[in-house]
Length: 128
Length: 164
Image (cartoon, rainbow over all chains, first blue to last red; front, side):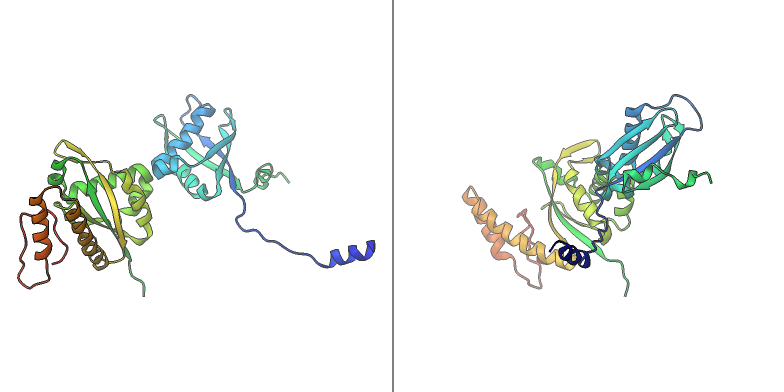
């Protein structure tokens, strides 16, 4: 009965395709400060992200649940997590942010993915 | 057929201060609503809602306001209306709030709703009358409104019926 049962189980399979099922989206971003100066720490970085959202999308945008998962002060790069419905708002707010403490700044979005594991490898920096 | 569709939002300005009625103007109200949208939805929301935004109709006696906006952004407008907390004119600030009564696709549907709403409001006023004078006034104006050619309007009555 064992082998027969396995054969039956192997013949019948089901394929599930889930679209847009991920709850969160992850972004690896880098802040560029061409004019130099004091670098923001983690709290100031989060404040900067929330300020960008507030300028472009108001109080509703500033209330978007954004988390800074990692932050490196040396390279000014961070991994952000945002709820999937808010990805467009966050990315557009980061794109249009121009000033940090009256210094020019720019956000570069390096990678984005609905899976955190996918941010560990970057095919752009692959050395062949 | 591709045309620009609008949404007309019918609201009522409610204020405890009776002087607020005098300062209800289309420009001040428009500025107050746009300011609220800018606070709640930011630059993007303000630009979205301002595309076809005007104050179409305003009645200072009843505090009825009709706002117009694009169909794509009427939800942004409606969600920002509770954040209008005061009207400012000439360095005077009156606290008030906006009650949304109806959202319609054309001015005609909003007018139909307003006529119906004003009828029910007049009846409710009659029930809530405290002294006999007020009761007589309201009853007279209720009996007077009719769709006739000559406009017989009871001028001393504050509540204006929408039938014209």
